[in-house]
Image (cartoon, rainbow, N blue to C red; front, side):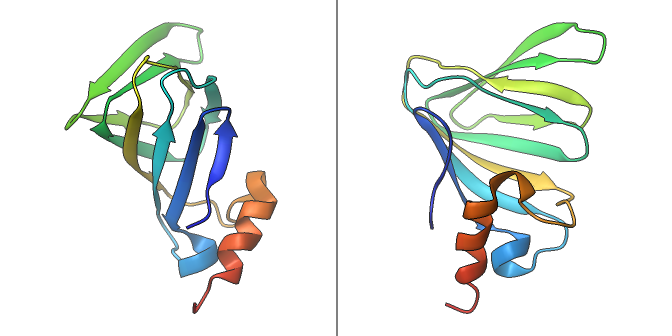
Length: 127
């Protein structure tokens, strides 16, 4: 699967998507993070997500609409649920890490935030 770079030292491969598989409700993939990766932040306004740590550790800074922040961490074999309506930022942990993620529902237009990656996945249909 092609990889989508979120920031220096952090990327993902989406193996279930609207583009490639015509998935209507979910996306799934793996995310890999170097020990010193640059932070990656996103506002999760219209989908829920889960992260299951398969190597190392996940560290997320979570901010609600009122600006209150908490830190969530998961080690190998642990799971984090990320509901819609919060701002999230993956932070470096000092160890090489990987996690399996699922998000849903998938937005109708697909991966509009990553048009080139979306085109790569679409080109893989039926391959």
